[in-house]
Image (cartoon, rainbow, N blue to C red; front, top):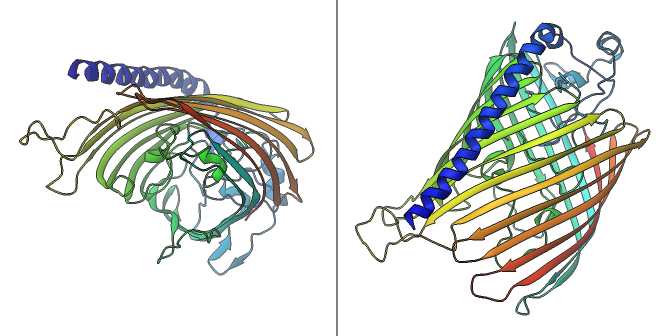
Length: 465
C-alpha cells in the first residue's frame, strides 16, 4: 500500500511541477516581447459611459476597442456623495482584451487586480440576480426518490471598497455584504459576506492581499453552470458527486479559511499569484494549511493559465488522528477573436489521501487507519464556446466531465452540458436563458452501478452596478 501511495504522489507532483516549469518558460518569452509596450499599456485606462460594476466572481470590464483618450473625455463623473462614489468603469482594468463584450470571459478579471481606484475615497458597487426555472432529477437507485420542482433563487451583493492612494502606493480593503433570496434554507444569524480583505502594494506592479477572497481563476465553465445554482450541482445523490478538483478549497471562498497572497505583475500580459491559506475548514471539521501558486499569460487573443496546489488537514481534537492530504494542478487555454467568437478548454487533477480518526491496528500510531473510500483520484476536463450573433446578443455552450476513483474499486463520473442565450438591455440588464443536461454514473466498490440524470432550465435577470 505504501509503495502505491508513493507512486501516486510522485506522479501528481511531477505533473504539477511540469506545468509550472512550462508556464515559466512561456511567460519569460512573453515578458521579453511585451516589455517594450508595458509602460504605455500600464498608463492606459479604458472607460465606457455608464458601465455597471462586477458582482462577486463576475467582474464587468469595458469594451476593448474604445480609444482611451476619447473614452476618458466621454465618461461622465460617477455618482458621489463626498468621499463615497459609485465605482467608475475605469475601476475594472483591461490591460489586454478580456473577451467578447458581455461574454463569460469578458466578465472575468484574468488575474488583474480590481477595483483599480488610484485615489483616496470609498468606492461602492455590487450586483443582483434573480433565477427562475425548473429542474428534474431522475435517480437510478430505487431507494432514492426522483424529484421534479420549480427553482427560484436570488442573490444580491453590496460591495464597499475604501482606498488610500498616494502616488503608486495604495492601501485598500473590501467587504461584500450578501443578501440571499433562497428562504427554503435556514438563514444565518449574522450578515453573510463574500469578499472581506485588506490589500496593499503599488498599482499595476505588485500587492499583498490578506483575508477572504477568490484565487486566480484557471478552470472556466463559460456561460452556464454558474456558481451558487442548483444547475451547477448536477444530478445529486446520497454520495457527493465528483466536482472539479481544486475549486472549493482554493478558488472559491471557504468558510473558516483565510488567504494570504502575493501578486506580481511584471508586464501587462503576465501575472503571478503565490497564495497560502490556513484556518479551520468547517466543511470537513479539520484545521487546514495549504499553498497554491498560479500564473497567467494573457496576450488578449490567447490566454494560458496554470496552477498547482497542495493542502494538509489535521484534527482539532487531541483524541482524533484524522488527516487528509491533497495535491493537484489545473491548466486552461483560451482564445478570443473579438468580436466574433471566444472558446477554451480546461484540465485538472487531484490526489487525496484520507486517514480515519482512529487507528484500530496501532493505538500509538500518529494517524488513523487508511480510508480507502475517502482516498480518491480526481480528473476533470471541459470546454466552452461563446459566439457573438448581433449587437448585444450572445450564444454559448459548454460541456464538463469529472471522474473520481477511490481505492476500493469505486468509480464515479459527472458529465454536464449546457446551452445559453443572452441579451443585454441598455448595456445594463443581463437577461440569460440556460438549458442544461447532466448524467452521473455511480459505481460503489462491490455494488451494482446506477445512473442519475438531470434536466434543467432557468432564466436569469442580472443587474451589475
